[in-house]
Length: 180
Image 1 (cartoon, rainbow, N blue to C red):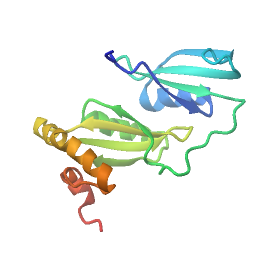
Image 2 (image 1 turned 180 degrees about the vertical axis):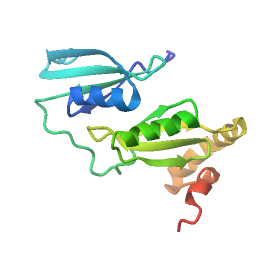
Image 3 (image 1 turned 90 degrees about the vertical axis):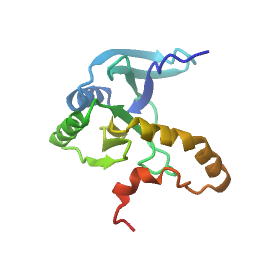
């Protein structure tokens, strides 16, 4: 089997209409379609839902479920808030700066521009509390090759020690300069 691409990624949302409006206003994603049923097609369980599909560009689809009969949305209290996020790629720094201005104009608290050396990004939250990242590549082919050449060794070292291997510490030297 060969995966061609991710068909869609689905998350839960608090309000489908507000989600559609947010993603159009802030990220310029169009609503591609909606599906609503009283039962879940795969399990046949009775559970009314609204399932929306947003155009994330280049054939990428971001989907959400509004589930009015389920307990309120929550998140894993043992996972740091910054960990789970959806990252979107833009073409260049100009588009990243435009995305930042657009998010700030919408009244969002934006973190960044954060320099990861191989890419730069900003972070903010959608109306359901999902952390979003907008990123643009800044890597040279040599930097990507350098990162890839140590990836397996880093994973192996981590599996043994559970301490961050320092093979790619060069990526965040600028961000951590002067931080103790």
